[in-house]
Image 1 (cartoon, helix red, strand yellow):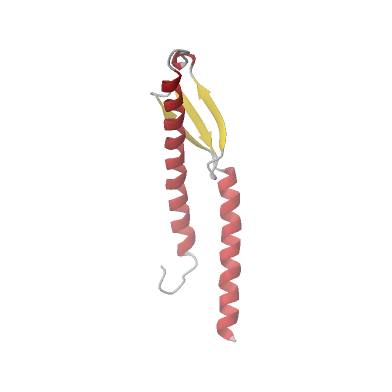
Image 2 (cartoon, rainbow, N blue to C red):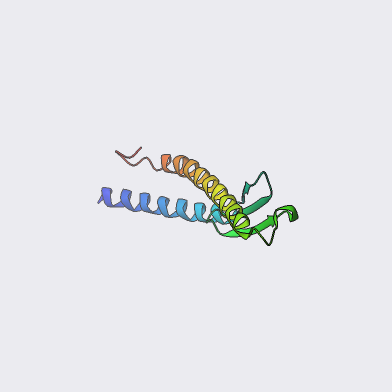
Amino acid sequence: MRNMAEMQKMLKAAKEMQDRLQKELAGMRVEGTSGGGMVTVVLDGHKALLSIRIEKEVVNKDDVDMLQDLVVAAWNDAAAKVDGALGQKLGTLGAGLKIPGMF
């Protein structure tokens, strides 16, 4: 029975960590840029697009494809930063669980 109680404690701790991480992700703000700062996007930790800023100089009705590429590149830049931050957070949070054979 002792092992069952320990397992329940571990599962409760994991759930609390998951809840805390979800709150942190919702509050996270990560900026990505492209075109030397001509396009900037801001994502939260769930990679939801919160804002986008496009400098007037990059807007050209005859070259919409370039603007689209810059927006995608800025989003990808921000998404990679979210992934990096999440990897760091998971590394530190996961170490606190002390699951045998995992850490």
